Image 1 (spheres, helix red, strand yellow):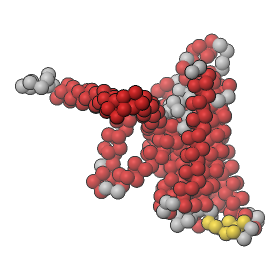
Image 2 (tube, one colour; image 1 turned 135 degrees about the vertical axis):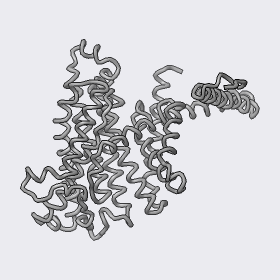
Image 3 (tube, one colour; image 1 turned 180 degrees about the vertical axis):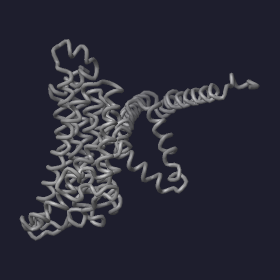
Image 4 (tube, one colour; image 1 turned 90 degrees about the horizontal axis):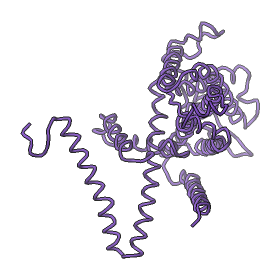
Length: 403
């Protein structure tokens, strides 16, 4: 089989899997209870956020510890629009039954603009540095943004008594009413009726992810990969490294703002914790779990992350020590999975293909022998590695040591 044909078959297979996944995502809200639909909505939005973050990390090689500030900028912009602009200008009824939907679109646009403007400023200074220094300066900006919203310093420079409302945050769920389209009335966002917002999130998220996919597949994305692999060589070829990284930072920040605004509207309010630097760890964890070198890896990582958190919450003992439980899981993924869950799934698919080949040649016995050779041997090597690590930590020199 020629390499071109193999690549074409792989592409067709990938499209088939994506089509099947989309079909499942369209149907599943009619099967799951409301709580699970709400959880899946959040997982998908975090997935979009992580894909935007991965444009900077996985494709350009820049690790940001400050992406929560773009979520905060978009979220506060959306919240202030619903709380200040809509009542002041009578936009709640200005467009009839579509008013809530139109205001929702305006809130998203304002969120994206606010995040993009912040990304322009922060990105200009951040891309002057590289590697760990880049990560630290994004962390510093994020901490500064948190202080501003935590203590509502914006109220001193804006003609408003309250802007961020300090540690109490802003709640605006009551400002999001119902939509009426041709006599069909539904809540845009309601905890007991999560399907409309789920489908809106799925639609907007799909468009956003597709736009990011076109970006990484374009010449612009190719330059991003070149910067990740060898920025010195890219610079020698005439690429303005800092300017290209700045553009990538702005795009990543804008798409993060889109996902962030939708997440905040999904929550119905925003508090300063959304901008805290610890919140920036979430897209990093999600991307590492899913696989930073796979385009849809962050989406898979987000779904895995959210449902594992949900699973841990079902057991009080695990919930009490959820950081330990999740830390062990993350350690397993980093140590034994190639490119996160996505790499693990790919390797499992290759293993099934090899097992099918052994079955065709030698029957069930061939599959058993192959499993013993591949799985059992791998588990034994992992066991030996763990034992050796424990021995080195405890100072033991071997099974017969008296230490």
